[in-house]
Image 1 (cartoon, rainbow, N blue to C red):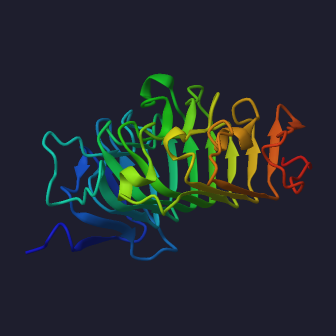
Image 2 (cartoon, helix red, strand yellow):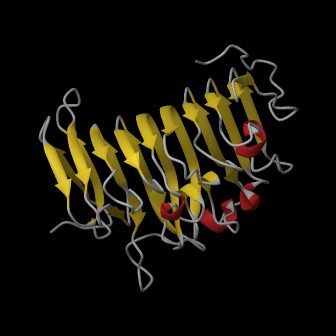
Length: 289
């Protein structure tokens, strides 16, 4: 019999196949990888009206295309447990630890609200990885959870990375935050150690109209955080003060570090000055169009 704590379920979808979710797909604390067997001919998953993916342990979506236009729910929702899941998820301090959520080589279209929502529960994802993905937001304000597209209202993420990802908005309901954590999240409250850091990485990405007002909030992790922002294009994201917003309005603690390199910032058809928040002198001023 499979052990939810130690074993991973791997589901290989038929290459080129078409699947429909008609209700929430709940993996019941199992670790799950959902992928197309032939990555060159990806399966399509269409999400129905009241359906979505419900995760409460490690989750990987890989080599799949997802049409989320039919649901108002978050595409990925963390399980809203009624009783604490002791014995299934590790909780060294204040948070139940999920080792990873990975979105890899996926095209996701028609996201009407949040892409991910933690249901205001005490989860911490140790590694949230987005890689080689094309994602279309088509949001309306009423569908966005906790004002955030990647929304951790009760918990957070220890290490976040987006590599070779394009996210663009075609709707009018732009969330206030691209990525939001619970303000109480700190490294020592996640792992019990202050010797570690929270990392935030954006590399080779393109973002178009994905947020309004802010980008992220990191009040709890500002003293122990590392930011690497390299070779990204930001167009019409909020008020254009992207570098500042990525660092939680520039609030860096004594132990925090930030590395910036070769980014493009563009707002209303013009290059957008980042002040002292990107001090690299390497930002690009050519029109990204």
